[in-house]
Length: 300
Image (tube, rainbow, N blue to C red):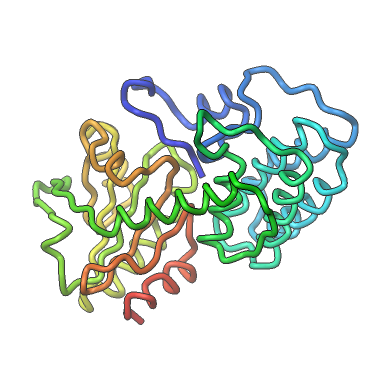
């Protein structure tokens, strides 16, 4: 997953490579090492760090096995600030696709054990990012975590409250063809709202699957609304080059993105025909995973 930035904080020329260079690894709401230089690592930490940096280059089956082994390796590390950063980074990257429940469980266990042994101070009264990362895995990826920490409980409550707010939100946006869409006007349809950006590799990777599903189910009432906070000059040629057929719309000033409290992309929300939020993802999904989400809205 890639963290989102406001238009004010993101230079117009920013790219995934610039982001990666500035933060070393993007990790949702946090970063593995918030510095430009390579971190100082022990002999045990260095190979784990090197493998995490290259996870996105691996075929999915190899990536799943590697992710699971990395989780086990992180659990064997002695306590250190880098251990926490590695555990959070791996947790974030583990949700970019379908790498299996067992893999995600090992990742969650590694993060929970690290937090149990190395509690992190709260963030100005809010749960610190590692607790939110763990809560996200538990709530949306349906893994288990044993952690008796107030911050973890606060993180779970935070996610639940965000979901409750999203249930009652509405928006009106115009797509690239000039058609206006209002979420609340789409009762009777199954609606998948997808937050994305051209500079986000996981976003780009899931787009062909989204388009295939749109072609398959649009006559059965599926509507996909893809929302980007970027400029028209970037989005329009990008979509045209890839022949994306579902509606793509711009979010000037990030008003809808912020209304829905989107801090990492890609992010997808599925509403059933009654307008109830029934499924959501916290990262890139495969076609199989999207089908499972749509099934919860009664579309099969």
